[in-house]
Length: 117
Image (cartoon, rainbow, N blue to C red; front, side, top):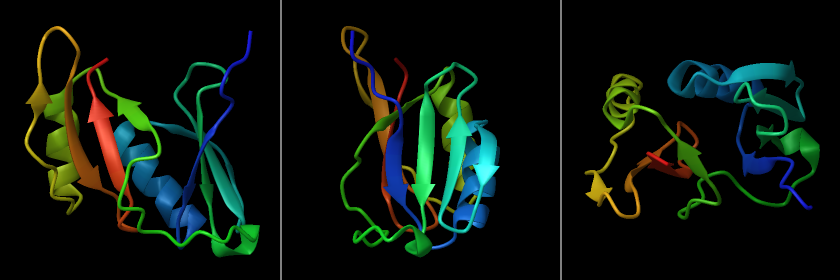
C-alpha cells in the first residue's frame, strides 16, 4: 500500500505560518526551522510541511489553487476562526452525498480548500 506522507505548501516565514496553522486548524507543530515547519493532525503520517525560501523551493507563496484539502469536523467553527484571523472564507457549497466545502486563503495568499469529510 502507498500513502501520502506530507502535503507541501510554500510560505514566506515558516515559523509564523506554523503558528497560524496550529491556531486556525488545531494542527500540532513537530518542527519549526527556517527552511521548513512540519505540523501533524494527531494521526501518524498526516502532515503539512510549510516550505520557506531557505528550502530552495522554486514556488512562490500565493497559490491560486488548493494543492490539498483540510478536513474539518466543524466547518462553521473553522470558518469563524478564519474570519477572526483576517481571512475571508467563501460560502459553503456541496451536499450530503459528497461533502460540504469552502475555500479561503492563508496569510501568504495560498488558496485553501476546507471540507467536512
